Amino acid sequence: QSVLTQPPSVSAAPGQKVTISCSGSSSNIGNNYVSWYQHLPGAAPKLLIYDNNKRPSGIPDRFSGSRSGTSATLDITGLQTGDEADYYCGTWDSSLTGGVFGGGTKLTVL
Amino acid sequence: QVHLQESGPGLVKPSQTLSLTCSVSGGSISSGGYYWTWVRQHPGKGLEWIGYIYHTGSTHFNPSLESRVTMSVDTSKNQFSLRVNSVTADDTAVYYCARQGAGDYYLDYWGQGTLVSVSS
Image (cartoon, rainbow over all chains, first blue to last red; front, side, top):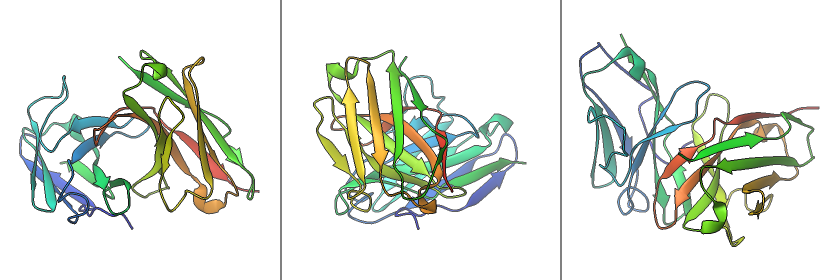
């Protein structure tokens, strides 16, 4: 079982908005920055969001992140078919003294 | 643009040692400032952090794997490596190498991953 909890799947129509949640605890999300990754099959995972809500260069502003307490969310607006992928949240766990990830959420754009 | 590429055997026998190498281009490991990290993904499962190595050779591992994992770095080849000994079928996974900024909590560049199967 993953340390961080994500819904297994979400879906929405093209052009719509989807929110992916990531739940943790005070030893991880509650006290450390959260990052989000997009993973297409056979490709290298791509960093989408870091430090809770910052976007690396080249990531469109359709992707946004936030953190509140021991949970984090990734919002994707203006959904495109190319957004179909697995999405993972990640952070550091101060109790486990290591990186931790969510189990991943499969996004389907209907 | 930093590029990472994993290489190594795709099949390892139970009880033997899994060995992988990550070749880095577009950036120098010896310049410091980054933790060179390994992550794995069991079939159909989420990501699992294995650990990292600094250019000095300093390491930090997942406590659940610490007894079986070693990492090394070869700055002359701009490569770092992972070894997992006494493997079982539970070590079957796609293994990724990645880069983490020292003091940061995210992995900004990843390799495409390599599947390692443990089977006799």
